[in-house]
Image (tube, rainbow, N blue to C red; front, top):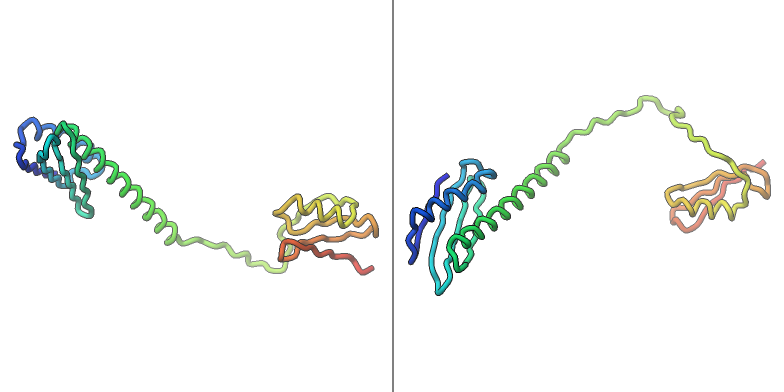
Length: 175
C-alpha cells in the first residue's frame, strides 16, 4: 500500500499522515496490501476539502468531501470509498455467481424405459353434477382436470380446463 498526501494551501503534517495511515485499515480488509492511495488536501473559504483516490489493479475509486474539520472530511471520504468498494464487490460476486450457474453442467438422468406407468395417484371419486365439478376445479387453479362420478348418469367423467383457461371440456364414456 502506497499513500501519497499532497497539500495545496495546507501542509500535510505528521499528525495527518499518521491519521490517514491508521484509517487505511478500513480499506485493507477489502484489498489487502494491493492498492495505492492518493490524498489531496486543500482549503476553500472556511472549508477543508479532502480528495481521496484509491487505485487497485482493476478498479479506481474516488471521493471528494468538504467539511470545517479536515479530519472529518477524511473520515467522510473513507465512508464513501468503503461504500463504493462494498457495492462493487457485491456486484462482482453476483456476476460471478450468475456466470457459474450459467456455465454449470447439469447432469440429466434420462429414464431408459418408455411406455411404462411410473407414477400412480389415488383420489376419491365422489358423485356430483358437472356444474359442481366445475366449481371444485375452479377452487384449485393449479389443477387441470378432475375425475368424478356424474350423479345424473352414474358414470365416471373427467372434467378438464381448455387451453384458454376460461372454458371446460368433459370426457364421458360412450357405453
